[in-house]
Amino acid sequence: MKRRIILMFGLTTVLTACGQRAEPETPAMPMAEPRSPRASVAVDGASSSPAAEAKTADGAGVITAVDPAVSTITINHEPIRSIGWPAMTMKFKASPAALQEAAVGDRIQFDLTVRDGAGEVTAIYPH
Image (tube, rainbow, N blue to C red; front, side, top):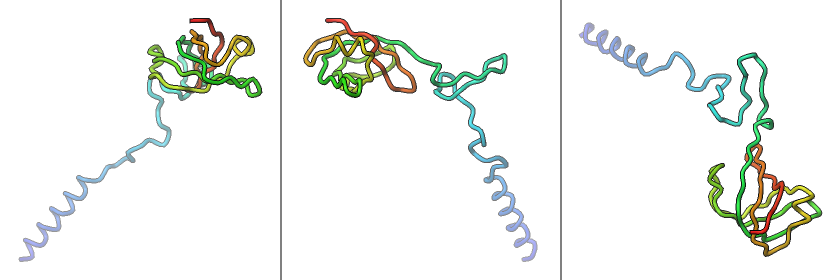
């Protein structure tokens, strides 16, 4: 009987130990994945900030609102495949030159700079 209890205790201890991890699931400092918005360290040891990783794209859509007071243009745009955005209506910051050309209801092509997931319209053209 003692032998059976000792065997059961030993088996329970081994099974419990097998289910535990020696290290925590998430590291204390998560590593950035390729193309992630986190800063990365270059080969020479210099770090690049996420703000430095701007992308440019172009899109097409219809202007639904213009607000010069806060320098924004709202555009109901088609999909922008180069940055993986589906068709939607979005409010964008806009350059002064783009604001001067913008009018509600205009169908446009536009140039876009994207940083940290937010876009800024840098130029608009009639479409």
